[in-house]
Length: 209
Length: 263
Image 1 (cartoon, rainbow over the protein chains, first blue to last red):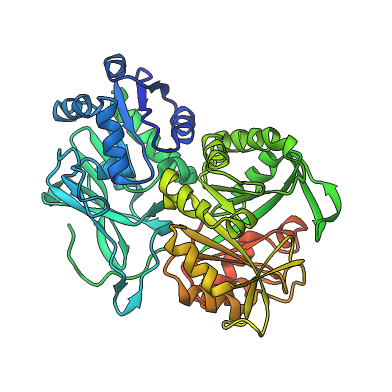
Image 2 (cartoon, rainbow over the protein chains, first blue to last red; image 1 turned 90 degrees about the vertical axis):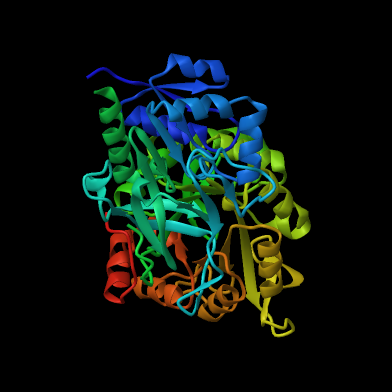
């Protein structure tokens, strides 16, 4: 197995540092990508991101990353989206209806309801939640493990085939997406202790093959 | 794979140890006096991580801002080796401070006095950095003159601000805070348990997570705070002085039917 070169996209939306260090810890060779052309120099692209959906899309467009990422994903090259990096793959988000997402996957991003099962919902959903992983998917060995989440919105893919894991927070929702060599996570593997690092190791091993 | 059934609760209640950091070193003391050097923050963070901490809080208690860089360096080194969420507070006064702290590797930044004195800082930082990283720390004390019975205090409880604590919590939420770190200054350092009335008053008034703090003296105290609506519980000295361990708190929670993260 060769050590894959992983590029983390720097578009000034969140904790690049933690993501890079976690990938490094999991055995990858990590490069920070500040320009779109740099994608050509790596085996795999990671899109992190915390904050606002509209801001994230705007930054990706201003920095000309959008088209590069789209063709990268459409050609099924290894990709990992984290948190907002999952949400921006969809068509639009209730967080900022005026800004379109990348629309690579059909579906939208919705806000958690204010109330569920007759109880007030605490939003953002913040903390360690478990995932229920699809059998034979990339996350199947991590079924029922807990990961760190912090989000107020969740993605609702039209095509349920791409759902790699679901989680419960008032409702049951898609907490991970898998499509060929594309993986996108609503939670933060870089903040999820040992299981988070294990997940990254599984991902790196797969792309190193 | 989604079957649209009623989802059962699976989110775990969080147990958060707080490290007091002075000039880049962890210190232990009672009520900020007789401080003893207790080592490197990275080492201590790593020990708590191994013991099952769900998150970590660094509270920079250095009086002088000359040491800002030292704290950020400790944050950086911690974030490089401990892969759980880290909140950093103390001395944050501007959006630039927010940015610097996040860039060093913090996931959340807590603001206290500076937010009371200039509430716009909550909105500005939420807009710039995202609500998920804005923690408004509220120190409160009992006061019958306030509608809720609790007043906001600053300067370690010495200065009453004449603001109702519940009203301030709601304003912080409206301005975009992602979480509230609530400390009872009546209970802080007493080990008499969290102020449950305060916890419940704030948790029922807002729809963002509330971390209960101040007064933990036994594992059962943590259970009570969660039952009163807190999403997380925080303590410093009981963990520092090894009065009991994080795993004992979690065991008590589990016995009480509270969902926890086993590690």
